[in-house]
Length: 99
Length: 163
Image (cartoon, rainbow over all chains, first blue to last red; front, side, top):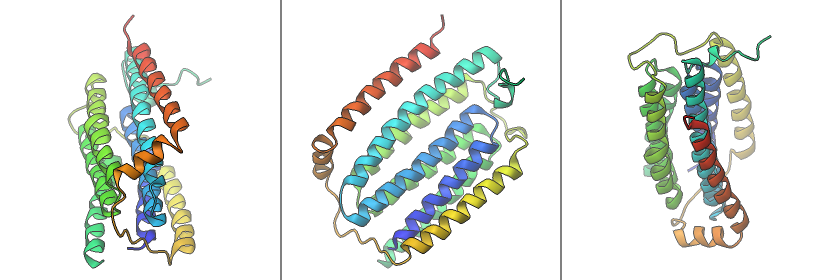
C-alpha cells in the first residue's frame, strides 16, 4: 500500500471537517465536524507509525483520542449552557459581543 | 497486497460518503450516525495498518462514548429531529472555497513529498510494545493527560450544573 493513499484520505476528511465547522449552524454539528478533523489527524499519525514500523504513532493517536473525549465533554457542557441561556443552540444567535 | 488495496478502497469510499453525510445531511441525528460510519472506517484502516490497539480504543472511546454524548447533546438541546432546511448558515460558498483550497494545497504537497513511499506492515504492532512506550518514554505526557481529563471532568460538571 502507498503511504499517500492514507494521507490523502486524511486530508480529505480534514477539509470536510473545516467545511462543516465554517458552514454548520447548530453547535452540536460544529462539534461533530471538529471530531471529524481529529479523526483525520489520527489516521495521519497511525499511517506514519506503520510507515516507520514503530508504536509511536499509536501512542500519539491515543493522546489525541483522550483529548478529543475531554473536548467533547466540555464542549457539550458549553452548548448546554448556551441553550439554557438563549433557548437555542443556533450559533447565529450567539451575538452578545457584536457591537 | 491487492486484497489490502481493495479493502482500503471500499473502506475509504464508505468514509468519504460518511464524511460528506456529516456536513451535508439535514437531520442532526443522521449526522451523528454518519459520524459513526467515518469513525468505524478509521478503526478498520488502523487494523489494515497493523495497529490494532488504537483501533479498538477508537471503537470503545469514539463510537461507544463520544457518539452517545453527542446523542445526549442533541436530545438536551431539543435539536430538530425532523429534516429541516436551516442547518447551514450563509457561508456555504466561502466555506467550500476555503476547504477546496486547503484540499488542493495539501494534496499537491503530499503527492510531491511522499509519492514513492510504501507502507508494508509485516506484522501487527503488539499492545505490549505500545504500553511499554506509554509507560516509559511518554510517562510524563501520560500523567499530564490524566490531570487534563480530571480538569475536563470537573469543568463539565461545574458548567452544566443547575444552580
